[in-house]
Image (cartoon, rainbow, N blue to C red; front, side, top):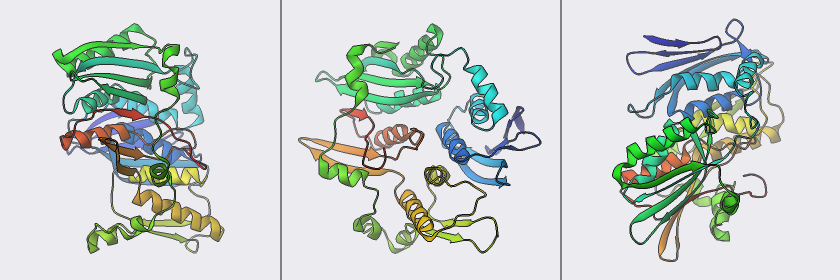
Length: 367
């Protein structure tokens, strides 16, 4: 068994490809804050890991967390040191001093600078996913994307990215990124450039083309439609699994609420649950009172488990359009690796991408 250890986080690797991440502070405890579980799960999901099981203990002020995780793919290159640093950065007040010391030389600690990665190359199946995979491994977060295909089978891709390591201001980091892309694209790459975007790209950063109103209503609606509730295409057994059960029990403890959830397993399940609890401002270790609040939480959890992503296939003129939407946390961060997963699915199915966009949409009650 190998180990990567630190004052607040230890990561252990076993021979069976299981990893255990333990988070601790001051005799195995860290500051308990609303949304801490969501933040931890988001980071773990963003590093290509899936939480197999976990154990969390808290007294309402301090907590101790142990998570068993496995990689989504055995070919994944997990950067354990970076993972540990990111986990530490969200855990506790004394850990935060480490995080901010690391960022002290940056003028953009509150809002990372957005860089424009622009490259031109020959088109091929799976190209967009291969590029996205490289960016994820380099810990670059994709904010917006604009992909255009020309009649002569060339593509011009523009990725607006932020750097989790906040090193893109250095020439070495930019050069290393371009070299990694050249390595995956090979001779098909015609040009590659990574710089701060000029004012001529402001329009691209502000928004994307909006879907028709009827499509947008279905895509961004927070209510479950009758079709979604019935799940027509599923067998009786799968219908049972697609009917999540959420039970709230206040009788088991005088100080805590027991929340029991039964649903089909899926990627990012624990993140989705924790994100919903965070959005509802519910803290682990606190009693949940009030029937209206309980009903609202149960409904939102069921929606999250049934549809962590909203997917619609529609026709726009001669083209087939795939629309994928996911809720944004109250802190402004979206579900990790959505674009990665979508492009991977299209690559596996052998479907070519003619044009692609990533953007934000604000509805009446959420992003």
